[in-house]
Image 1 (cartoon, one colour):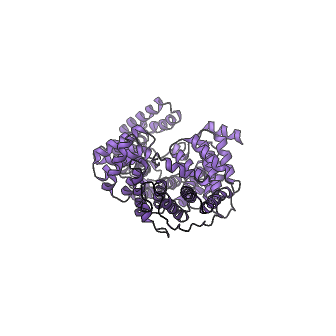
Image 2 (tube, rainbow, N blue to C red; image 1 turned 90 degrees about the horizontal axis):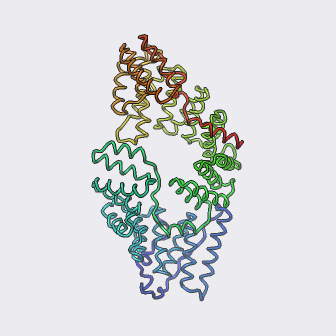
Image 3 (cartoon, helix red, strand yellow; image 1 turned 180 degrees about the vertical axis):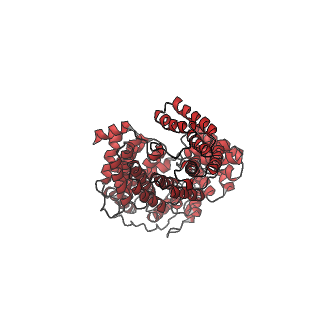
Length: 568
């Protein structure tokens, strides 16, 4: 939505000054008023009020023009950093009128208009900033990205090319050139640019997705799959001194949270923890931003290996939680994090307690419902897990993990016919496709695999269909390759159709592989079925009671258990 105050075209065109260092022509300043700041923390509110008072004082007679421009600009930056965009705009425009050769003000206006979705005004502002410094890489990148986001690859290209001349080793520039090439269907150039960017910064995980698209278009499906498996939704940062000044314009919990999140995405956990901690000092846990910062600080500490520190800050986030009937995202996330920690430590009852609280704090928290279902199944509360998985599916009907968990709960409850029908329906809802990311493909391939197990070895005769089970496993063999789990299922299917020679050969191979890998528990389980096939008997247990599939959720870490015990 466009701001109420329209863009000052004269300012952006430089018409407010002669451009030769002379004083700008007299322009009546726009009215600048403070918005309602009552929702801000007191410390932050005081900073904005101080900038406003300084701006009002600078309007007095005798104040040098540069000082007045600086006062307007400083207020605009503080309001901008606090996301009060409509209030910040006239302050920036006044600063630009008074100092038309200072590129900061059109540059910040470019970002402000981006934030409110006015790309026409944003492009005009960035173009004015570029006139004042034609080789500025951040401005060139933002112009290029804006045109790309508008589907204007040809217009984006000159900006990225100019930036590349100045900064050829900048990842954001190389990625921009790759995106332009991808849009132009120049897939070889796209691959070259994306690979160059990853060679400079292997942590730029978001590049893997467009790179996979380029490889796929070139017919290199194996490379495409390998890059899709590495994709993560991370931000490609632009080296931007002016942007950093804007982030520091307002020392607020929000500004530290945004910077800390970027550090987390770059896996710079110590830096993220430091930024979140600075934000914590400006907030209290009885505010939403305060609770969010404490949860994120706990996350950064956990990723750094400081488990007791993580637990402390997760609990701090809960210390001033709103009433039990109120929904609060930060509280829910802290409860979820504690629940996952407890599950990873093998403390099932504690995990269920925290995860149950998380879904009460956020009724649409799909991951928490999923984790709760897993924790209940692991603890033997299988009937209760069905409701948790169903809630997860109510939130996200395409959740493969929740759908699989529900089906496996039906198996554990000996409702094999229902389980078969459930997995058949899941295959229709979530079909496997070669264009999906590797992780999602693996998730969807669970359903035909589970269906094949039931068709091959269900204890209920009406459920079994050995020939269909063989057909499914042979199809999976073509898409997933040979795996021990698939081999175990194929042996079940061969035994069901009476081909015990094949069943023995495959099961023996799988058992030996597990023995060589030192998987003692797997060897014991696999050997039981091997003996059946050697005796000419089919399997009637799709998953043994000690199969890992019945213990969903994170792997139990004994060291984590000790660390949590020490923090109790």
